[in-house]
Length: 471
Image 1 (cartoon, rainbow, N blue to C red):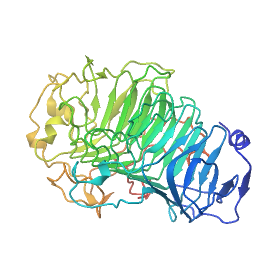
Image 2 (image 1 turned 90 degrees about the vertical axis):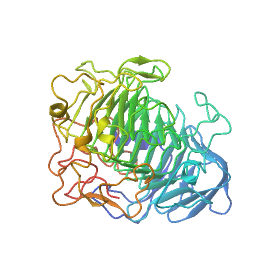
Image 3 (image 1 turned 120 degrees about the horizontal axis):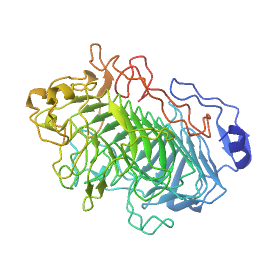
């Protein structure tokens, strides 16, 4: 969609006279205002539209709704404090324009982040403080830039709109197959189920950091039928299950097709209360969806990336789409050039095995370690193997995160660690550039993506040239 078309459908805009600092990952135009400025005088409740003004604090006391045709825009430096578990229901347009120097924060006012050991049942990050952001099929655009979403995912008391049942527990839900979802340079701390679930949409999800997502189940970014786009340069730590997943649930066209590249996954997969082997622990492709899974770093996750096979009705996980169609955004599911590190027995699942249901992940010679050579030509997809000799090998050499580290089941937040690559890392210079991201969202400083970033020269979300994830 062209910039002029986007501007034409928005309410009257007033351009402020101040400009934002430019960064390598997010170039922001002057802060803009949509409609009237929203007052900070009383807590918000009910229908809301207009602009939350920069560097202000707002309180929300019950569910707020952005009606179809309306826009809610939040300027840089705003803090939104959610009281009594409210949510945001978006039938129109929702835009947050934080900056690197002045991010936006939406949070439960009664909760505080914690560091160190984190377990379900004792850490309030998994309980949900505010309901979340629910975008209906009439929501054509949501843009989140440099925004903290903390302690979301409380259970919805009533259905926010048709198709989402009462009791849903997502931090963000998006459900418009022709709509645009952009999330860049943002943070998500805490979730009770999937952090973000899509039933359709053009998506560009880049350079975000997710911590402590899912209490005893749930993924980071979970793309269902009708969702097409990119999930790249994201940092995931301490997720219940996967950081990224594609699954063509819902029978929605087009087929879910997602590029998952240059992500870093650490300590994911250990709070899933399902049967071991029925879900992966970093990136998963299942249920007639397609994906590209390249250039990722996977450290102490329950399993390596998984391409699901079989047709297990009880587990609701079905065969990934591995067929070829030249006209598709992703002609064929493909993967490789991923670095995997594991302590203890975790290397036994670098290539996930058919413990609970069939998998069809092909061992790749381009991965680190070279699992194709390690398993040999006689290896059968899904067969168990002994990976003991790989334990503690291929340390990615993060700047500040000690390996080996046996606290992978309970270390679920960044804390003071630094997951950039140190000199001598085996991930440096190993990125694969022989594919292209999907380019299906508007590119605009305010009403679209900051840009569709190409694959990196290094593995993982942090690039040694200073690009990639900026957190």
